[in-house]
Length: 122
Length: 122
DNA sequence: GTCTTGGTTCGACGTTTGTCGATGCAGCAA
DNA sequence: TTGCTGCATCGACAAACGTCGAACCAAGAC
Image: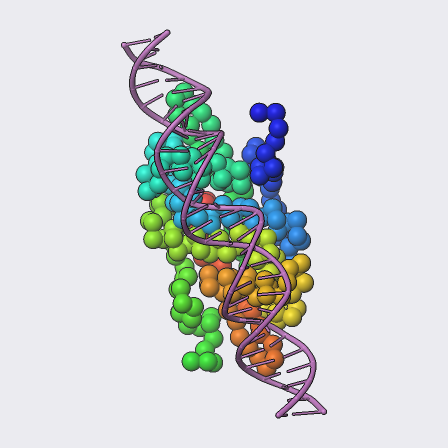
């Protein structure tokens, strides 16, 4: 466990919340670095299963849900876990263990930043 | 069919009608079909090069730009064309040839629908 | 201790994606 | 006609991705 995997470059730290990245896309073009960071978030929502998982959590009570509540999306349980990890790594979700169960919760400010980015009204 | 303004008529141009899909993600979970259609749009923005191209067009005069104006994003010309096609297929852009040049333009209502989807305020 | 349940990580495999050079096509100008 | 320029498409290839079963870990219950 001492060596880092090359395929797991720390693009976004899990606990690094609140990344109000950029102004609306109409204001100015994104730099390469901004685009690199922002694309991770959009890519996280760019899969049907992840989008369903995210909507299940977002529409759940308090914007959070136990994994056991959202595991019925048509893929195996390890796959669900894999997708939740991707959403978490992108900063869109946070997770917390409470007793036996793990709860995932939306990161409101990150999602709000994405929404604001797409607000093209001048 | 050629002279119709996009903003005045229902959006029906692309093969996939990526029209205003769904209520905010807090309201209810997405169905599998909704997720499938919506994920295409997010996936389109889930690449750094495409995100830069999109921001270049969105921030350009009138929300449209000639390909020749936005080709300097660090990849080859065929790759730029490939990415623009993906954005267009996802419904986020429309294209129009004027004389020698091809102009790409943002599809405001589709982008607005994505933004609204991520508006998690209850 | 052992057993059971909820979730994550591992290893592998087939598919998709991003990228390029080469080629093709449309429009303009000699 | 010929030539040139702006973009799109083709063909190929490596890298990334989504998926699964197996194995593993964490927390209770017995």
